[in-house]
Length: 436
Ligand SMILES: *Cc1c(COP(=O)(O)O)cnc(C)c1O
Image 1 (cartoon, rainbow, N blue to C red):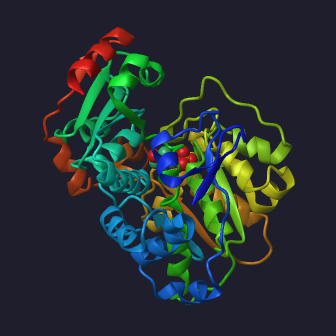
Image 2 (cartoon, rainbow, N blue to C red; image 1 turned 135 degrees about the vertical axis):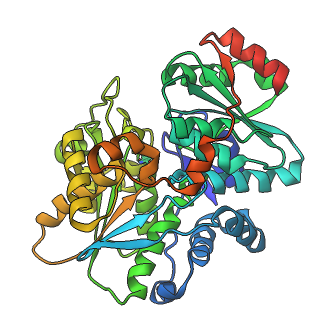
């Protein structure tokens, strides 16, 4: 597999280099140089394949010889060891539940695959690497779980004190072993700044092999293509063959970029919907061709999508040949206020009993809006990116008391272990020097 930088000012690299570098030196994003369509026989038979079998075929098509088949199969069976069921919610309307992994959000797919891939490459070199990651909530939980007990890798997670939910904090701070949490007396932006400074610090770089695990890493994108194909496979298995439309609740647009990758590999999707909250940069761009970042980003109840300048947007553009018209042919954009989101949560719950987290509700709304523009029926799929219990405050306010899954409830009784630090880099660096 060869990867190029979307800024075209850095040399092409192989997968191993792209994964450990994260970002190319020219600050672009790594992208595969080519997409080979999966053969028609694969698509004809896909309804008979399991998620793991699909994951193998899709990643093999992308990765090629960078990871030998046998190792890739092992990696997938370990990383993708939970299902992604397609649940019928209404006539011709299905929810793809991506929250059955350990942190109960779709980021588990990316984090676990990335951990597996890094660990595979490290076996050969016997190096110890140190992952630094700043989180506003969901990323940290997935990365913590994804890398927990992974040999040759330790993880340090920085999170803003008092600004993540109880459940999210427990997901970061209760694992221990090779996963450490630093509670920063500041905002998410402060956390991000500290991590960036650490990567730029010469003494730290000389002393340690530091790596990042954020969503611009290509290793997090590849596994997200798996479940798009798996969603289609589940429709096919049921003999449903209406044109497929997929609506994706979006923030940094990694998820939707992975969908476009699946489409480039031949996935027969008629159209995608980019659904956002009022951080609506991409829907606005699709409508007008003008890209205007929102800074600072706006706070909403779907807070994992509060992104004012989506970092994967250059990838999406590159996948669609930097052509605005082509983007409009492939995707439509819709955005929603918190009020509209809550009404949808309540409406769907009232009619069907299905509980959606706020992000999921945004995707549902986008799907329904796009459907209204069509004259013929489709199979509509909207993604559920997190279990509702991760956003229990809003969910209970809107639809009343709901059960918490055992896995999350058990967390609340575990003891938090975190080191409190200030926003001063000197503090953070001192901690790193004596603890890595
Ligand atoms: C991260 C996240 C999103 C946004 O995904 P992107 O790939 O950044 O567009 C949506 N919903 C939830 C619950 C998330 O955690």
